[in-house]
Amino acid sequence: MMVRFRTLSSSCARSYFWRTACMASLTFSSWANIAGQNPVRYLGFAEVQETLRLNAASGLPGSAIQESAEWDTWISARDAEVRGRIDRGIEDSVSNLVLYGTSFTSLPRVESVERATSEAGELVPAVIARIHALAVALSSDTNNERVRFVREFLARKGIRRNTEEPYFTENLRRFIAEQAGYQNRLQDAANDTDPSAVYLARGTLFKTRGLSVDTSLLPNLALEQTLRAMLQKGALTTGSMRRIAVIGPGLDFTDKRDGYDFYPLQTLQPFAVLETVARLGLGKAEDLQVVCLDLNSAVVAHVQKLRERGRAGQVYTVQLPRDTRAEWSPEAIAYWKGFGEILGSPAKPLSVPATLGGVVVRAVAIRPRYAARMQVYDVNIVAQTLDLPTSAGFDLVVATNVLVYYDRFQQALAMANIARMMNHHGIFMANNVLASQHTSDLEYLGRRTTPFTPSGAYGDDIVVYRRK
Ligand SMILES: C[S@@+](CC[C@H](N)C(=O)[O-])C[C@H]1O[C@@H](n2cnc3c(N)ncnc32)[C@H](O)[C@@H]1O
Image (cartoon, rainbow, N blue to C red):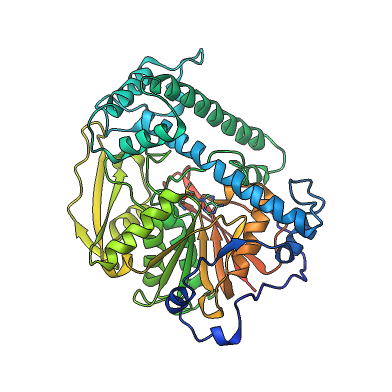
């Protein structure tokens, strides 16, 4: 059942700050160099008028603001509040590491969050043993990237030596309770007589959750399948894309689904989307530019580093694990096997820990020229925008597993913001239903489901909008 959307007409014009005729001939890289200044700024009151008007009756925080000064105060406070959720996201990743990590212990992984507690709600002994193992690893002289990350994080949070175990325990209890809360919310929606209730509940499910960085391969398959279907239907033309924005590329720390941590931190989506666009002939691999927008400094630093290393002629090697017991669909397996065929060449994968029976891994060395092509900005897409010259608008914007962390008003702000950075007829794709009262600059084209398993129990819903 399709979720119904309402798009109302708009009088809001895109901001043309910086979009002067004399800028039109600049290429993006020359612009970035010439500007030599940070093009990131808060969304101004004038450019959120349409979103405010559409959401005035929503009752959502910020939606009733009527004055510019009040807006300026609110939007910078929201930015701080959103960024304040980053640490809780890291704490969630630490909980995933405790439950699933294999790099710091040979103890068996916990099968799922549900198996982490007894019927009485207490952490099971296997989990307590894993908490202890992580605390021991922290005090060792380890090269483990994730353990060092956790150590630095604890130091920044003021968690003293020998108090790590109670901290991990409390953190895990909170995490498990939150997970149960999400399950309950989805179950309530499933019991609702309105069949669209589940999609609507999913759309803002994590609106108060910590901001996770976790990422995995398969959402990119859903993006590729959706773009392919659009191309086949004539909704897209070959050669129409040059500049791509990836909002929230993420970092594979310990994914909440598979939880692998036996390879270095990596990001996949910027390369996946670049390769998809090239594979489908929507743009030429050699001409495409990818701009990553993320508010997490670890993600920003990671992309900056891979770009610098690419410029220095170094490949970026990614590891692609697949659990052979997970019953991926033939399309998912084909995507996994083909990943990197345009951008890189096969590399020797890291060996899989013995505790991960059934997991196979491919590795791809992405050519330096593609890594060097990545750009990244520290941007909170809900509150901040990039002032781009006319020649540097985006033809494709993807944001998967990002907007689900925001309420509908904030989603509407993000959508208007995305629209103002896009070229006319550009495509915006997300993987959750965005039922917000959003800018009429974005026309809803539809939703497509890509199953990742033959049963369809695991998959992604991609929603597509076109910039008018
Ligand atoms: C769960 S990860 C998803 C990664 C990847 N897109 C995927 O689907 O696998 C969410 C990413 O979005 C980023 N993010 C969350 N809120 C954001 C915002 N308001 N602006 C920019 N990035 C955001 C996070 O820092 C993280 O990198």
